[in-house]
Image (cartoon, rainbow, N blue to C red; front, side, top):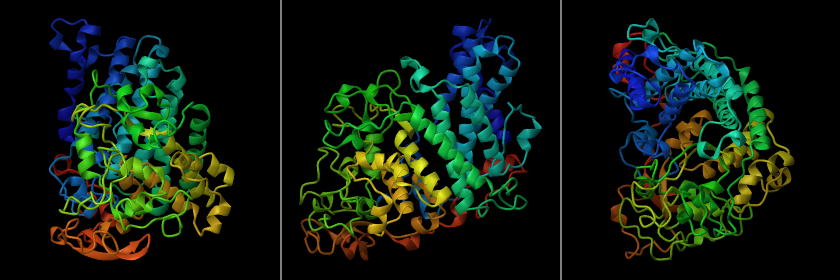
Length: 591
């Protein structure tokens, strides 16, 4: 970690130099040192505010944010995310996610240390310290999700600090610290109701609770389904399994239930449901809310009480400054698997529902379906179901589907590229409902009808789907685990959850190594129709697979034979430069 230390030492100097006129009286200003930080409450406020820049941002993180190249999307290129999903990723020289995260951690630790020696009233800085503990937890957990066990850093290290050359802590040791830090944060943070309107977007007590629930659910299911299989022995590879205790699984799940129920009951959040004035398109417009010009109902961000933990943006004050409409159109076209996962409005899968209209014409499969099918996957220019005969299969990037989720309304007229500035959700109420339902299932093996009604059925209702019950599931030979995972997959499509979910459920090697399909060809308007379909444009041709009407030939977008994701790919490799600088670091198994 030697390189990290060299990089991060000046970082807080730069941050504070930029606002030195506000609270630091120095002559000359260039003489700012660690010893003059944090003598007034305003210093801690300003310092803690800078930590929000360490969150994943629209700008620079589009591939990571949108789960590019997963089993749910059809476009297969050679970005790192797409190489990762094929099991083709190799250790790189550097990794910005590794370096930048430790940069943030060092700055956070410095504030926490200064708070311990603060001479003023500790109550004056308590909230800012709580924010810092939240972000230290957030950054360490981000590293765990990507790399597994990593060096646990709770001090602002100097260049020659011994801790900078320490071996990796196990994921269980790091997570224990994450949970401890979140408890401190929760105790010191204000409720959402007590955050002033001009401070919305700052971390609340409920946001910290929801994030802790996410950590606990991730780690409980990881321990249950993955166990120690990715840890390495900590001697020749990996971080080892020190601190692993599978008796924590049920304890973690029970706390998820408690935390999510508290947020559900006390947080004051609401699902954003304006289907009555948005033609059942709430699940599209929610993500593109800006001012009243961002949707035909004239709603703005003040109408959104669903976001719990999110990045705040503004077209004037803090624009998104990213190509996300363009990127979402080009890289998030859904795979056949994703489209077929959406239920019919009777609540049944398409291979069971008499309402499913098949695939003969391009518009047929959109009939009588979950509202999110139109909200996410219709023509981004019109937001209407595609007109029959207009969706051509004439090249590798055309495979029968559109994407409009995260595409600005009336783009590029209302907002041009780089000008789109919706808020960026990290955790929203719909996910809290689904975490609650999943934790109940993982703990008890079932949910009561009442528990379904206060969680998963609320998410389904916005999508135009009927409530499920134990009787409904039994009658239709369905099971609650499948439905919880289906809802999570559909509701959180392209929201940075897919890779994490597949891995923590222990099914990534199965799902990511399968064939990727596009449009159904056999028995549809595309079959033997040169005007609509040019077979020679597709390198892998067609292959028979299961669809909603039985086995049919579909476009094969990528062969499973070239997708070799294994258990060893669950964790990313540590960057080579860090291994060279710190000889005590061991690479993850398989790299």
